[in-house]
Image (cartoon, rainbow, N blue to C red; front, side):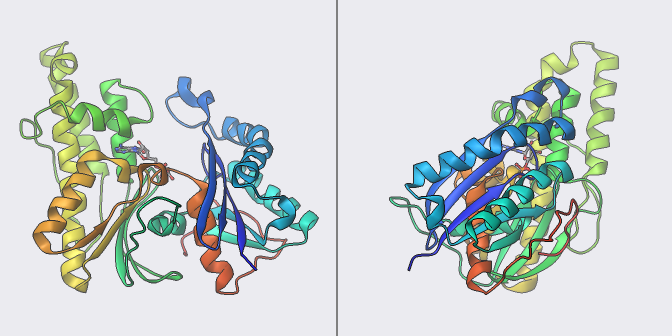
Length: 340
Ligand code: KG4
């Protein structure tokens, strides 16, 4: 009999549900939240209220699109953390209710594990290219920047991670400083494509080992723009694209430097990326160029699987389900979940 898994993701500001059958994606529905637009960032209380409104229609749509009845589901995978607690509570509580009413098991998933396994999502009609184990994943999002060694679907080792801010925060901060809106990543990505990446340079951190730091480069940008504006009030207007290009290049250089080191240290040439920042065009091009030069096999998730989505949660949940993992009903969501 087929294993049909419903995935539920509600860790931040996207309510998403997906259905997979024996590892093949049947549907993936995502409801974003416009309510945060005016605030320059996600407002946790508003996010959880929007999840409450969205979760039932999103799950219903995912089942309908998949052509699957709730009674046919085998298990429910849900994001336990990390994320905003109020948001996580909505998905977790919904999963519990459904699990009880259908009398099927729940499987909790670490959101980061979903990103790390995003390349395993299989879809009818799409190329099926999956990394072989062990592989390295550069996991880059609004909350994390890590290099993870993945020895098997459930075997993870964090080789390096940020000691302060995540790289996504640096993109968002850049956009805030330049007044180009939230979330910053996609805007900076687009503007960087129009500018000269060599004209402006920014400070690079010196962090030992494979760890990252992004707070210094954020401050370097802040002072650079502040000084520029003191000299010429039109500084941002005149130089926006070049600042974005130089800043994005600096962030990519920092990320790639450690990733290249991690590959050399481990001898692993199977390389993937995941998380919201893995949508960045400059980073994707650089990984492929570097990969060609160093003989890596690179795997880039489809853009729709880079940001938060339930397909990756269903996929990770499927691996956990196959490994025999079941989550008891008294589970609580956790805003900081370090262990995969
Ligand atoms: O993984 P994600 O959707 O949410 C979590 O943090 O879990 O990542 C969101 C982050 C934001 O900081 C956003 O600015 C960044 O991903 N991002 C990008 C791009 N698209 C989204 N950063 C750079 N370039 C992009 N194209």
